[in-house]
Image 1 (cartoon, rainbow, N blue to C red):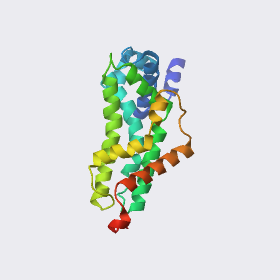
Image 2: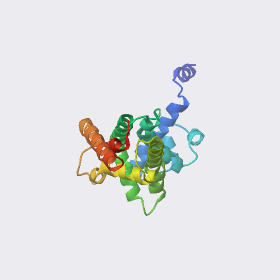
Image 3: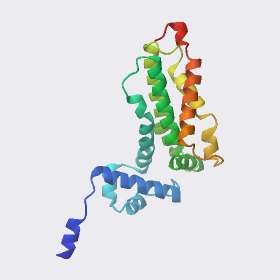
Image 4: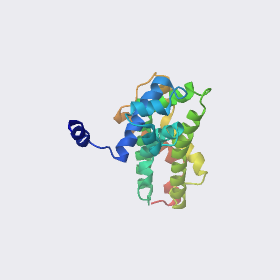
Length: 218
C-alpha cells in the first residue's frame, strides 16, 4: 500500500518535461562520451526513463541532436517572426534584435561545446557537423534571407541576392568572435558588448545595402 501511495504521489511528467529531460541527458552524455560513443540506451538511463519513452519523442540519436540544435536556433530566429517591418527604422530594430539573439545564444558555452564536438567527431561521425549546419546555421541564414527579401520587396533595401546579403550581415555581426570562442581565447560577450556588436553590424550592413535618403525612403 505504501508503495502504491508513493507512486501515486510522484508527479507525472508531461510531454514537454520529458522532452526537456531527454535533451538535457543527451547533452550531458554527448559531452562526456562524444557522439559516436553515445547510445540512446545511455541517454534514456541518464534521463531516468525507458527507451520506449525516449523513442516516443525521438526516432534516433541524430534526431535528438537535431532537436538540441534546433531549439537554440529557433530562439535566435524569434525576432524575425515579428510582424513585417514597414520602414527603415523598423528594419534596423528587427535586425538588431536578431543580431543580439544570435550572439547571445551562439556564445553560450553549450553551443560552442556542440561546435567543438562537431569538429572533434568530423571523421567518425560527420553527421554531427551536417546536423549543426542544417538545423542551425543554414536554417538561421535562410530565415534571415527571407526577411531581407521581404524588406527588398517593400523598398527598404537595395538590390542584391538576399542569401548573400544574409551571409554578409552575419559576417559583420561575428567578425572573428566565434573562432576566438571556439579556441577558448575569448569569453562570451557581456550583454553590453552584444548590443554594441548588433548595432554596429546593422549600421554597417544598411550602409552597404542602399541609401534610403537617395531613394526617397521613409
